[in-house]
Length: 257
Image 1 (cartoon, one colour):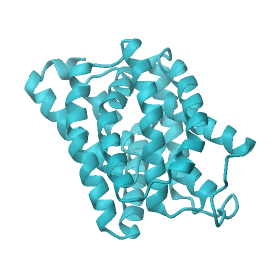
Image 2: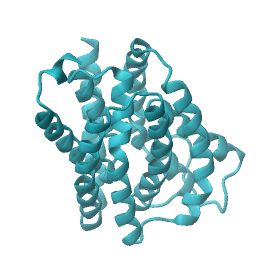
Image 3: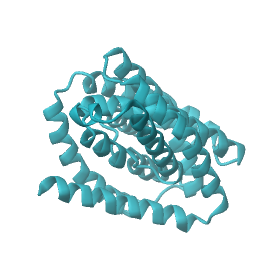
Image 4: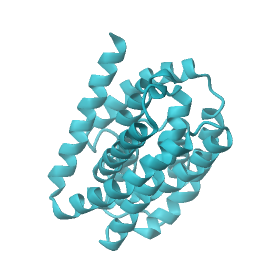
């Protein structure tokens, strides 16, 4: 961790506090913030798998803040959230088991490959796999259970672009508007990230002081993101998703060349 060693403890704390604000704000209105935070952590000198664990641990408080506010504003459908929580947790736990043992070089290779899929997913409309239902199903069927188990597995394993994947999946499943979908995304994200963070922590892949600085920033970022979403029209959320997609594509090109 050469680059981090060259910085003072106070400088590291400030950097990760600011990073926590930005990540929680982006996740609060759109998702996909790990595509920004993970590369920055790696550039600062953290091994990729340690960056993966520290990033998750630092996001927990910010996501909780966002969920709390969105539920207070009435966007969170708890009936759907509770129905989709078991498959999400099952997949998240399985993905974490693999993530904590994968080699750093393999993780970097997978990161580059996955970003191609994320860029494609984030630019897709809502109709490629059929129209969303007019009303949410009362309970997930076998296909939905397996689908959200797979989504949870991806989140537990890699997480980059997870917000886009969740938004796409939740809209196709529920047919709810984007604010309600975003609230569901944040609720499910909180629980699978909590489980995966504990897994990374037990495996020794979390730098706790950096994660705590990021978590403190996340309190502010999560609150700002939920307030922004509540006060602005849906077009702002869509633009935020589009901008984040452009950032993903730019990072991919940078990695290739």
